[in-house]
Length: 482
Ligand SMILES: C[S@@+](CC[C@H](N)C(=O)[O-])C[C@H]1O[C@@H](n2cnc3c(N)ncnc32)[C@H](O)[C@@H]1O
Image (cartoon, rainbow, N blue to C red; front, top):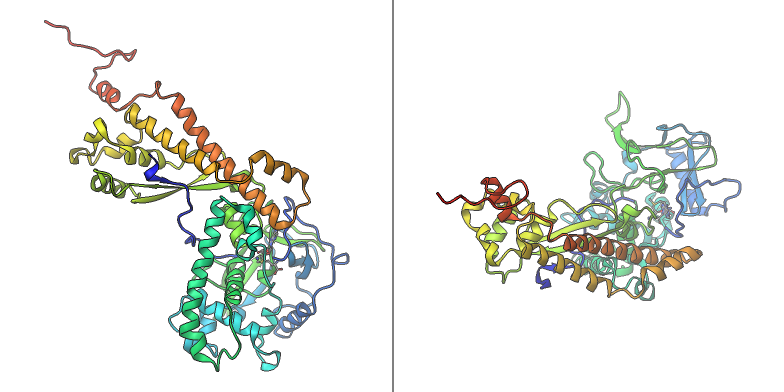
């Protein structure tokens, strides 16, 4: 029954762009206040970084914000009151790190043709591992990067066992596998053959570190820049209570007489002196994506999602017709549907399910004369049998997925209420509870549909009505014999 349905996450590396990373994670629903006088001392590396940026005139004692030690690791702390939309920091292009930076560097020649993220990863690793005395100013930046974040890519096996049964676990394992394969390739093709450029051992852990850094702090959605690290600007932390993504950062011209570009960061809300400047990283990321990319989650219900994978089975006798119809309507042989807690199903999901389940006496709809109209028919219930099958299959898959978790929602909620959890455990519990809630939500939708099977109007009745053969009360009108 469930051959066309799988509940596993399809696509470990989503095409969504990288963005922003940490050491500790605490989930703060409101703006985090950070009083500089009360905060722990800044690591020496941050002072060195600040001096470098001051010497280079990127910042000064009058800058609106400075690096500070905050609950999320490092952050940007206001030095004075900052107004809404006020520029907090401007970083000229020569301090950005992207694949062009790598091309112009000592390793540019050997990184030619690599994927941008891989060349930047090699650049970061080399800057991290090379000697302090080698005179590279990038070291000032790399030395303030964290060793790891709470992203699931850094979790131990024991920590990962807390997300057993979740889609996040399978995504995390696939991502790690992907990074490992990329590492083995670049190790063989670039690192080992160029001992003079990489005179130190580079390990898979170094590569995972660089991947985690990029995933958590590279800016995206910028004009002409798909993957770029902006030193200092990447100290900005995320606030769940900021719900606008507008104007937090942009790339612009450096001034009327300059052809240079600068990265400009604004505060989306007013900030008092001593408080942390925060932005919204991405309103569209699910908790699983936040956990994987940055190592935190939000308690906002609509961050909880579950990806259903539906598929037209290649052993289906109508495979070719079904695929033709699916593709003509913007869906594929294997189609992913992201379902969000409390939200209606994605609009194409029911028609797609009906198409996949179509057979028996409904199969005539697959004939080519119906080709232009078939999707419209699939938007509404086709037949009782067809509708019943999709309810049963989806509910069966939800039940089976729900049985693969080690804990119940109630057990998870008790832990959440108790509070005081280790940050990674809090992520694990939030994720597994969230996924189960979405599965229950999906099951609830199809349970309701199952109970309404007798009330739906199906294809044949609609057809008769369109032909004027159904009376007001739904009774079928027969011709009076003459
Ligand atoms: C762009 S970096 C920000 C600077 C970072 N805090 C540091 O110490 O370098 C993003 C990382 O900061 C941390 N972070 C940002 N916002 C957070 C939040 N609201 N809760 C927990 N950690 C957060 C996460 O580790 C995330 O991966």
